[in-house]
Length: 261
Image (cartoon, rainbow, N blue to C red):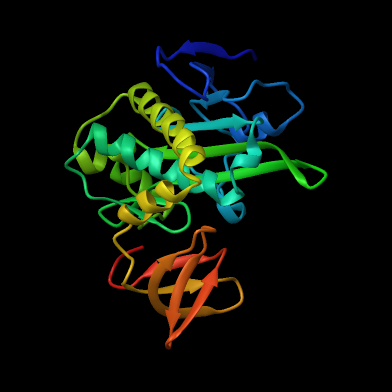
């Protein structure tokens, strides 16, 4: 099925101003990582994904047209960005887009790739890549944002820690309006990373995360390590003070004490 083309009308530096829109697709990430030829900055949107997935091979649950399900394709100038930067840029961009649309909501970033409202997950990010030799040849940033789901959806899925924008704001926002804001913010933050060697992006991420200095636990797949969230490294790692010793972690699931997440 050929996609519909939606013109955003945005003035962009890096991303395309046209969105490829599918009513249904297996996965927007899979589509962009496939053999198709795409220009740098291509954005693919789907109303429904039959094989949506999240980090650590988790399934991304979504009913038709209740979530924003889209991916961004990049294959140019990738040497300017370390791999972790794409997750940070995407998280910051979603945060800033939601903040501009609903400034009253209690937003937070949680390492490495979650956006929370009132300590509940509203958005997840999955960054995937392809390499040519030792170099990145393409990056795909997949974003799934819960927008219109009701309480029953999360109850039926057993997602106690999940929420949607509609539940938190009591307003049914336009999916396309939100998407345009995320595209605009992503474009701006991709440029900002290049122009500041990433330092401003790290600074932004830290300012949007209220958990630095708090007690947390990280599950690195082998053990669960408690400690104090000390800082974020310039390489995107989380730095945890565990019994007076600072440890850097590059992957894992973080639990913040005294929250439902």
